[in-house]
Length: 399
Image (cartoon, rainbow, N blue to C red; front, side, top):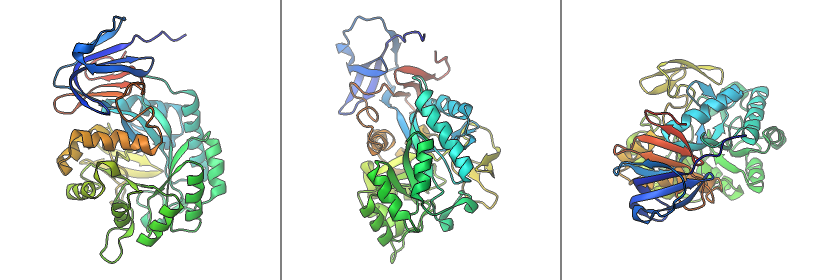
């Protein structure tokens, strides 16, 4: 029988709560939830706590949610092993990520099915506090456009097929929450409608859709764009494309990889000016090389060379990132001149709302999951709590 975890009292730090910023506050974490918070002088309870005095210059923010991540620290969702997902759930809190969507990629049906079964089993049977929570699966491909394949292996790309999807979601124990697809291809709009009817996010990505085709997809139920700018029809003055539609249509929430490599800083700033703090979702799209040294790594059966902060296929195509989500927050501040509150919206609140999980994730509020990140004066991750248990302390033990 697992030992009961002692409640945690955090005190002394700034708290970026859902409805206010508390300059010097306290927060009580108990039974995996935030049960109380406020100005430090109002802490009154006399229970036995693990008391953590946090330096006054530090900030408490809600845990970060990565809706698009393939791997980290040598592990990848497509490895289809328990150990791979265990590595991911253990490593991600170090960068402030407390929950995520396990993201697949285009491959053979057998390999995709193995990854989906493994993730579904892990989600159902192996989640635990003190580790990042897998909120579901992001199926990226194989229903994408070959002309916008990027690092998705072209040989395995197929048109949208509802029967295949039903089979895959059953294997995944109904855990697929988001699907990246090209709506302009045969079966695309039908798939978007099916996903919408079943409460699954339909995301336009790896797509060569025209502006009009994106509008059709929105009318069918699409409300998300996969890694804005990357592997999609770009902005042109006579054809706005997917990027133009993302800028103009409020229905679309747009993921963006803010590493300064996938999207130039000025374009990040442009996207922020167009979409605002409510329209963007920060993601990493990270692959297994994140947190590891430069070298050659596997991504979907392809060799990826990692050097100088870039992950590239042999032909020079970008193959995911090695970005940490905590670093994406800092980059966003620098690239777009936005506030920390703005980045919290983009990295916590917006993904939680998009996944229909804002009742328990995405902000610091009483009754929500105790997913908390403590940032130091330089906005580096100092501590992370996943559902009320310490998952990471910089320079110290977590248990």
